[in-house]
Length: 66
Image (cartoon, rainbow, N blue to C red):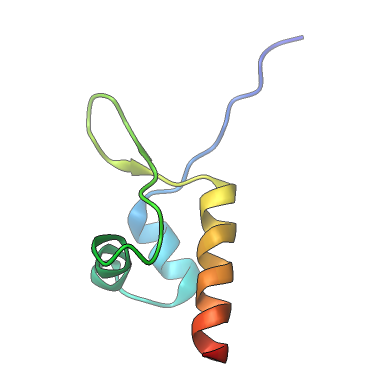
């Protein structure tokens, strides 16, 4: 069986999912509100996983309640 390839999202894609700008996403990172994802070893782009997106979803839900 061939190994499964993990798919990643880029920052602009994650921002679009949550209806925020990439700057808002970067602000959340800088403020420590969400965890920094892994980065591509060559390009240094942030590589967001489904788990990262779920953690952001939880953060956004808590922010709306708070």
